[in-house]
Amino acid sequence: DNDQKLWEEDPHEYVRKGYDIIEDLYSPRTASMDFVSELVRKRGKENLHKFIQFIVEIFRRYDEASIESKPYRQKDGALLAIGALCDKLKQTEPYKSELERMLVQHVFPEFNSPVGHLRAK
Image (cartoon, rainbow, N blue to C red; front, side, top):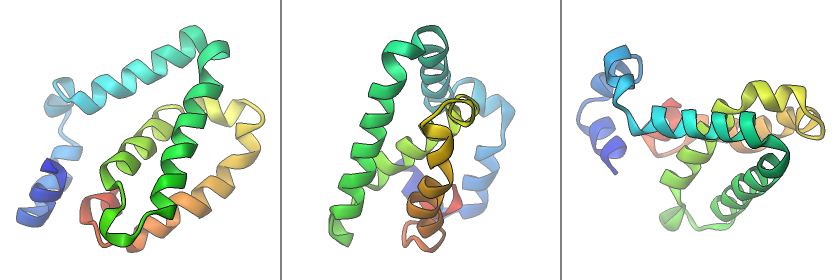
């Protein structure tokens, strides 16, 4: 909700914060991306497939929800997680061959999202 509020009040500040290195040091987003990356790097065989299934479930719930009840924050987090894992996903089948379809189905539509901070991602 803070992202949406900042986007509505000051979109320039929202974008600036996204590129602020000092802000990144203390960001819960950075910590969560590091956690996901380390989880897959250290225990990928046991966890990558489960984690991707979790992300796919978020995408499914988002797609099926009505416009007023879409879980925007969850989709934002799911896209953040995919971004954190992109190098691993580009090297690993079956994810490697599905990345383009995932982008077309779940990322490109957000360029027209009514939610500004999601569109900005």
